[in-house]
Amino acid sequence: MKLLRADMTTLWRNRRASLLVVLVPTVILIAWKNIVAWKGGPFVIANCVTVGLTAIGLMGYSNTLARDRDKGIFQRLRVAPAPKWTIMTSRLTVQLFLILITTAVLFIVGYNFDGIKLDARGYIFGLLISIVCGALYLSLGQVIVGLIKNVETVNVVTRLVYFIFIMVGMFGELGMLGDVMKQGVHWSPYGTVKNIVSAAVVPATWNKDSSMALLVTLGYTLVFTILGIKWFRWSTR
Amino acid sequence: MNNDNHTNHTAPVLQVDSLNVYYGSFQAVKNVSFEVRPGEIFGLLGPNGAGKTSTLSAVEGLLKPQSGNIHVAGYSIREQPLYARANMGVQLQATSFQPELTITEIIQLYAGIYGVDLSKEQVASILANIKLQDSANKKYGQLSGGQQQRISLVIATIHDPQLVLLDEPTTGLDPQSRRQLWVRIEAMRDKGHGILLTTHSMEEAESVCDRIAIIDHGKIIATDTPQSIIDSHRDLPAVIQASRKGKITLEDVFIGLTGTEVRS
Image 1 (cartoon, rainbow over the protein chains, first blue to last red):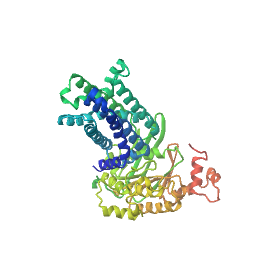
Image 2 (spheres, rainbow over the protein chains, first blue to last red):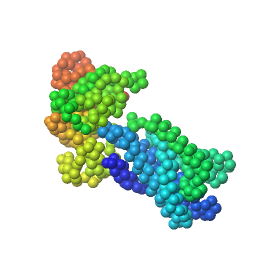
Image 3 (tube, rainbow over the protein chains, first blue to last red):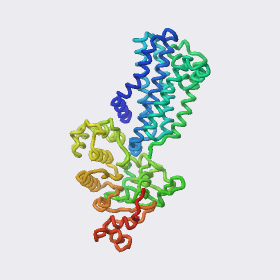
Image 4 (cartoon, chains in turn blue, red):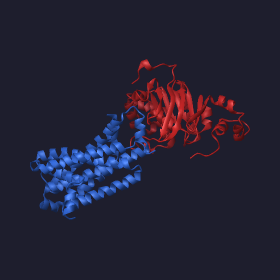
C-alpha cells in the first residue's frame, strides 16, 4: 500500500504531464462535434477514448518506466524486500486509475459539449472495457521499454508510434486512406479497441464482430505482455 | 522478517563463498570468498572492471551468480531473498529515489517496505539527526548531492539491518560532507552493524576500514587490515616503484598490486 500511495503521489505531482495525456483526446472530442451527426456519438467517443488509452500506454506509462529505470529507482526498490511483482502491480494500478479518469472525463466532455448521451449501462460498461483495452496499450508500452534502453529514444519512438496510431487509425477508420487500409485498421490494435469501446458504450449494439474484436484485443495484450516481460530489464547498466 | 533463530552476534553478517559470476563467456568474478563480521567495516577495493560491482550486485541479489553461496545474517540470498534483503541496508551509487516525492514521503515509503512503523515525530527526529529538518517537505530531486547521500544512508539503516552495503558512498562529496559521512559510518559500526564498503579512495579505506580486500581481474589478491596489507607488501619492487613520497601508503600497495595501467 505504501508503494501504491507513493506512485499515486508521483502521478499527482506529475499532473501537468497527465493533463496533456487527457487534453489531446478532449480537444479531438470537442473538434469532432460535427462528426457526431454523421457517424454517431458512440463512434466519436470510442475514437477519443482509444486516443486517450494510446496516449496513456505509449506516452505516459512507457516514458515514466524508462525514466525511472534509467535513474535507478527500480534497482533501489529491488534491493529492498519488495517483490518484483508488487513494484509493477503498483505502477500498473496507477495507470489503470488514470485510464478510468481519462474515460470519465471524455464521457463528461462528450455529454456537455457534443451532446453524446449514453445510458447508465453504457457508461459503466464503457469504463470497464476501457480498462481491458487500456491494458493492450500498457503492454505495448512495456514492449517498447523492453526493446529500447535509452530514455530519449523511448520518448521519440513512443511519440512516433502514438502519432502513427492516431493518424492512421482515425483517418483509416473514416475510409480516407482507402478500403485496404480501412480493413487493416479495423483489425489493428487501434481498430479493435475502438470497435469494442464503440459497442460497449451502447451495449445493445454488441455483436459477433465486437466479440471477435475483444478476442483479438486480448490476444494482442497477451502477446505484448509476454514479450514485454521477457525483454524488460530493470536496469540500463 | 527478523528471525531470532538466525541471530548470532558472533557469526559473520555476510558470508560469500566461492562466488563465480559470468557475463556470457567472460568471467567477471572468480571464486571470490570473504566475510564481514558484526561491528566491522570491510572495504572492497579494486580498479574499474575488477569485479567489485558484480560482487556487490550478487550480494544485493540483483544478479544471479553461476555458482557460489552468499548468506546475509544466515539467510541464503538465493533461497530466502526477501529475508536476506530484510537484514541488509543498501546505499547504491547508481540508484535514486523518486524525485517527485518529499524526503519525508521517501522515508515513510521505505520504512513501510521494511516493515518499520514511523510516526511523524520519529521522521522529524531522523531528519533532525542528519540536519535536514528544514528540508522535510523538499522534494528529493531538489536536494544537493551531500543531502541526498545523507538520506540514502538513513534509508539504508532505517530498519536497523545487520549488514549495510555502501557503494562508493563519498563519491562527489566535498571534504566536509565526506568527513561527516565517515563519522556516521563509524557510528554505524559502533552500533554493531557489519559494513561492506566499496571505494576508489585509498585514503578513505585506510581511515575507516577495519579490513580490506583488494580485487583485480575478478580475483581477491589480498585480504587483511590496511596496515597489515601495507606491511606485508612494502618490500615488493612494484610497490616501491609506485611510492611517490618515500612513505609506503595503501595507494602505493594498491597500484603495486594492480598495476599502473588505467582501466576503462
